Amino acid sequence: MPELPEVETIKRDLKRLVLSKAIRGVTVSDPRVIARPAVSGFIRALKNRTVLSVRRRAKALVMCLHDGLFLVIQPKMTGQLIYGEMAGDAKVVFALSDGQYLNYHDRRVLGRLSVLRNLEQSTYLSSVGPDPLDRRVNDTDFFERLHSRKRPIKALLMDQTFLGGIGNIYASEILFRAGIHPLKPSSRLSLPEAKRLVRIMREVLKEAIRFRGTSMSTYRDVLNRKGRFLARIRVYGRQGQPCFGCRLPIERTMISGRSTFYCGRCQNEDGGTAAKRRG
DNA sequence: CGGGGCTCCTGTGCGC
DNA sequence: TGCGCACAGGAGCCCC
Image (cartoon, rainbow, N blue to C red; front, side, top):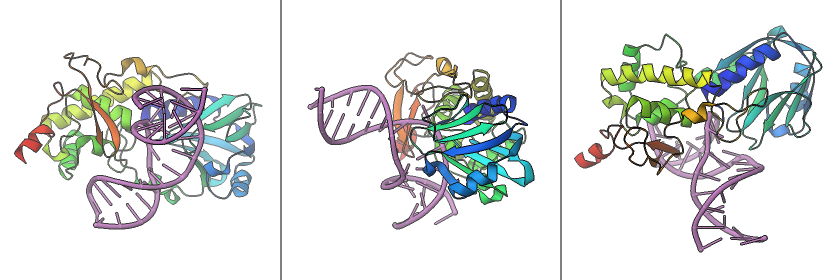
């Protein structure tokens, strides 16, 4: 599922392709993906409304429409938005005023679409933390926030109330490039480490946006093309393969129920084995 | 309250 | 080939 770089790529594509076009009609083939209102109300609310702006908030897309309505799309793991001809197998199809279609696909049916009057109605949108690319996330504040918690740093990076947008792939990639062990308690990061983490986090996310995201399996952009960041991936999914830094095998562990990949030598083990040793 | 575990779903790839 | 299980870019909810 799309993380920040993939949702940002989709957002930029949508701005180019659907901005200021109107939704002429909506077909819902799988009502499970419609969160609110009920399907009939969802369809009625969107009919003949123009897309005034397209934004990203964390991993959600927000389209502002006429009359103060918002279309919020959370693709979660396998949601896709594909522009072009009508797709028979799509869960939801939006017919656009340019004669083209925006098809919502979702193999695992975990994604959700909703129409809201007020963004505060979305618990997700009202609880997500600052965007990692936001300049207002500065070194000293970030350092202090890391020290107010003590979870493994990787769990914290993925906590959407702490930072909005980083998911399982980029959490591992960022920590590898920053040389920080994923199990290290966030409260034990030094100020230089926190500064480096902020810098590397932005670097990795921006680079991933330049490469139009990571296509592990289902991610596609709005024109159904794969992202090219997979070629830049250093640790995610590479357990047992040699580390690009030291050639030792990449390791895999579970952190808050999610696969985590890292190099035991290049990423200091201060939080994992050292903590265990101390008891 | 913070945090772990389960749940929502379908598809794929692996070992037996 | 077939079966069962683990696991997959996410996050809400329950319970300790």
